[in-house]
Image 1 (cartoon, rainbow, N blue to C red):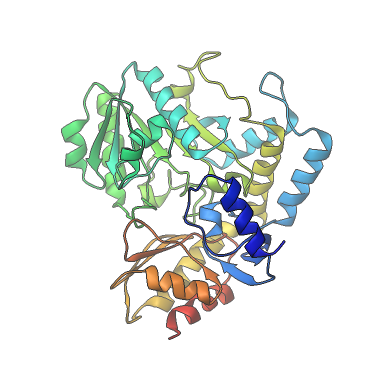
Image 2 (tube, rainbow, N blue to C red):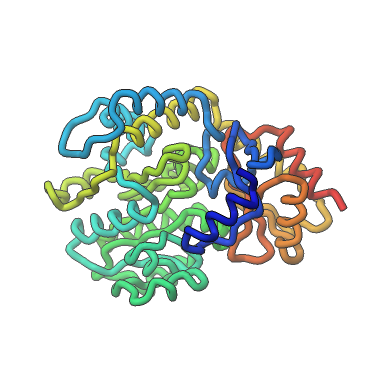
Length: 388
């Protein structure tokens, strides 16, 4: 089918949601995608931080194919070898205190369940989140999202959500008390424009939560699974070694197969009884095959170290660039702040067949590339930025 025909049919039969780029992606390999018209694009957006292992990584594809030939799905009412292996592998790369996994289907579902677990663990209801944070589009998650228009489109909001200022511990102390069930945050606020906090902030949050009996939740839907140059932001130097009580995951976890997860510590898991949580499709065999193969591919291809070196190379290359005000973020979650709107840059790069992302900060261009992206490919980005 031609792009014009694909576009016409989608526009006719699909509810309009996103403003789409003028292309139909039909094939991918590594950091590259090909369109229905046979054009080749460098993908430095990764399907919105999803394609961590690159498009159609051979190990992931093989694992999915083999699992599909055996059994596509059975629910959590039965045990499963592939689910057992995926859970064990995920916990093995997590910070030491996070000992159990709950599998679901998406990032917003992971966040909804994390908040529910915190309420069950504490017997409290209030959730503190942060201005600039994004946690998803379902009822509880969007009610805890204090970014732009999102909370408004989620009305009527779930009660009990209170905002604080990201990076400002005093603002947290002003609203957190013994009625607070959880403090939940994105360790790097991606959609807000790749906003970061000092490592000491996470240490202060941990101490405050311990003092008041509050559950600390890191929403690592975007920062997790190697993206920051660490398996997780949690437990790394970026967080001053702080481990939260719950980590939520999705996006990169399945290399494109829809899957989410909560990693929890013993304090949280002890409070969960049979039938407190549930999901029909969460933990399905196909998704579990994708999770296990994704973790194995990142490990075997040394992609976490590559994410760190990619960041270093990009920062060095952009130092002194006339229109770049700053480079923010870590690993393969990067925000390039320009001295004006990033929209013309985004458009120019797309003309050069380089896919990037924007953010709620009009001056910040976001890069969320596969963790396998190489210096030659970053060089193509740099050439596009330097072109007239």
